[in-house]
Image (tube, rainbow, N blue to C red; front, side, top):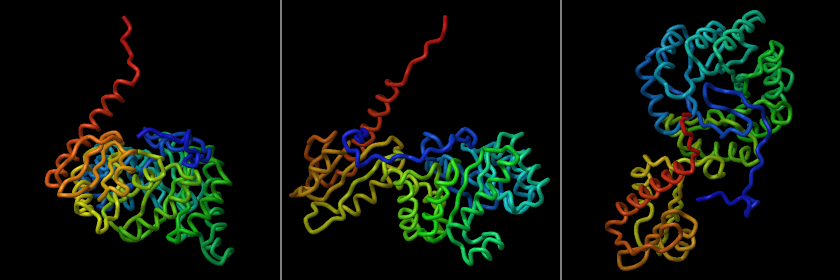
Length: 381
């Protein structure tokens, strides 16, 4: 459905003004769409396994994928991995400056690094030179669980002031070397600490911010914690790229990330299913139906909306604002809605196939309309 923030100003999110950097061919910051990231968990030295997982993340919609490079075997394999990847790769580097240089030379689009923990000033300059020579950006990644000892002694515990001071100290190293293609994250497993740190950092520097509640936990609780923490920041206009950290299949991180952005109207990909929780009034098994539809419609990437409501109390009203809708009725049938209007009655027995067909048809219609609206460039004679 179209964006109605001009008539519903209470839905408008004013994004923080940040300067834009490039992660490969993906713009981050400024007015660029908020990008969604995940990270591989295969041994990077196993290039085939890592490429296979990157393929799954690409199919799920990942804009950027991070790959850990803990040893020389990993950076050796990284060249093959980067050549096969269709999305930009971030090389995750800790402590050893040579891994950063190797990853930059092997095709990394970005280095996730803390300049302060890879050695003396000369080594930092070498990594910066490798990044600059190879068109790499950087991410300064501050985590509450690995703050510098002097900051913990100064503040007594991980706190927003400590995390922001760490981030700005690392940023200063890059700035002093005239390197400005960087973004920053200040993550904690505590969403209160995370949100407070990001708000403080957003006021202190204009670089793009990478959001995340780190080590959020398993799929269900980690999703909730991430939605609370990142959702509140995104609603406040903070954040240019996100990663949902779950102890689950990395593909789930991409799905949850897009769902958070879709809920706030910040990104649109695939079918947004609006469904009731069901009750004794339901004219069909709503929960089972929605589960099946999620699977059968996973291939649809066109942004669109689908309402699946069990009865006529809220069903017609919800269907008014969705591209396709189904509302349960009586005697084993319900009503199909298209573009907010009643289309036809449909027996429950064939409703899933009918809904899938209608969604696919609507997706094709929307894609055709989008293609027709794109400017045509004629070749010069």
